Image 1 (tube, rainbow, N blue to C red):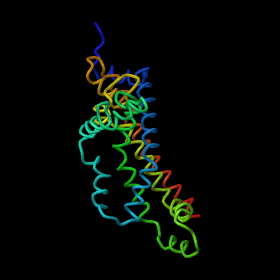
Image 2 (image 1 turned 90 degrees about the vertical axis):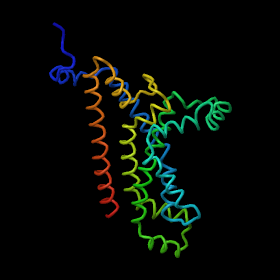
Image 3 (image 1 turned 30 degrees about the vertical axis):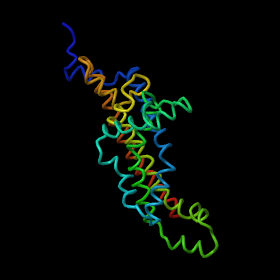
Image 4 (image 1 turned 90 degrees about the horizontal axis):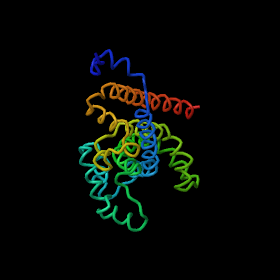
Length: 244
């Protein structure tokens, strides 16, 4: 008699037999999440600084726009990216004609979709940290003749680093689990856009994919938990270091 591939005993026995599918999805997920964080870092710091330190017309609308991916369905975000950055979209078509850059069906496109979805997470963490920075220190530096850039580099940025670090790690962990926007914008291509969530989805659609799905689920769970723990540990360590 053949093995019962749906039995709990078989799934548990096969959970630790990681193969090419799992390692390919893991490597691609790590690369996409890292690239999304790099794409987000400077814009997120700037957006958080604007929302915390500046008052300007349309600030409420800008704040809502920044956090919009948190409340929109990820599939809708992916569809909007497809309209904007697809080869027939206004920006995507221009990139294709001018630089021969196509974001759809590519790893770079997956990173862009992940960056859009994780951007509010990073902005929120940095903004909370920036709101806790004592403005009196910045004012004291200003009265001593320090310019805006010097005040930011020597006072504001070091004090907000715990929030920046927490935002980076949390956004990285969230990027590892992005599904809806990625599959809508760049499809589900093995070795190119099939990250861990997409590989898990594919395994669940396969008749004999239970063991693979279990391994991928285990990887996703472990990475997400590790990311959150690292975020908290590093933020606490940085706060202690800055407090010395």
